[in-house]
Image (cartoon, rainbow, N blue to C red; front, top):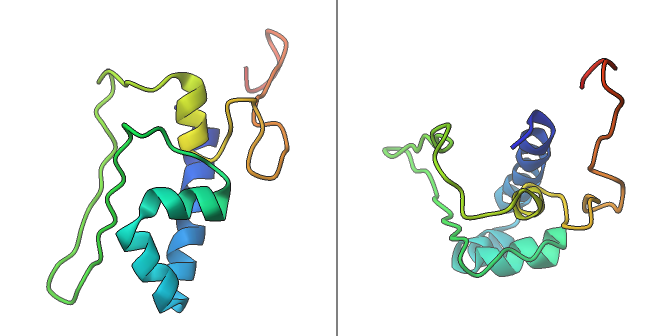
Length: 110
């Protein structure tokens, strides 16, 4: 997954966390049915075989989430990974703007 997709994913996660922090009903819905919340709030339908686990920290329990190891096979295509990270299979993000970067060989960032 590209750095841009990772950033998009973090921004979307931050958005969900911020709302869950301030809205207890939303928080419970996110815990109970994260697939539906992602679909309803972000407009992204996650594949059925993608598991989403929402964990709530407490005073005596913290969680550290680490990304999968490099080289570990992914069952998702690049388009599906983009959708999970906030993009869509058509190359746009949730706002409808292009999430696909194209450039000519030799341009900065290529």
